[in-house]
Length: 102
Image 1: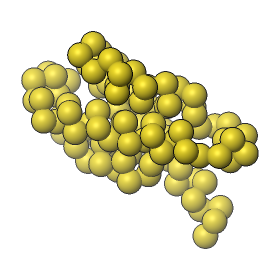
Image 2 (image 1 turned 135 degrees about the vertical axis):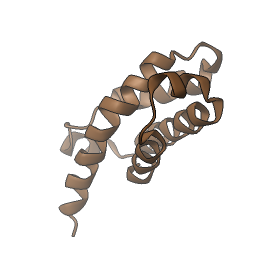
Image 3 (image 1 turned 30 degrees about the horizontal axis):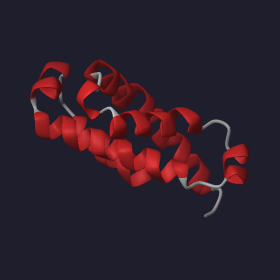
């Protein structure tokens, strides 16, 4: 999950919304990494999820399901906002969790 957040944030460095919505490769790569995050979140144990309520597990998994099953109706405003607001926060939360294990 952390690697996928790193990928998304690296994709979007210096990118504008207008560019994001017109560059199909960039949008597709970002969406794929959001799917990866959601798929990984779906495999996290319930016990771990309970230990880390700061992560929006249900929303992450729900987004993955939307991206996979409703691909032709994807809201690029939503993807842009999630990628720029939620992903950086998720990245920090995941890093904080990982520091507990080192």
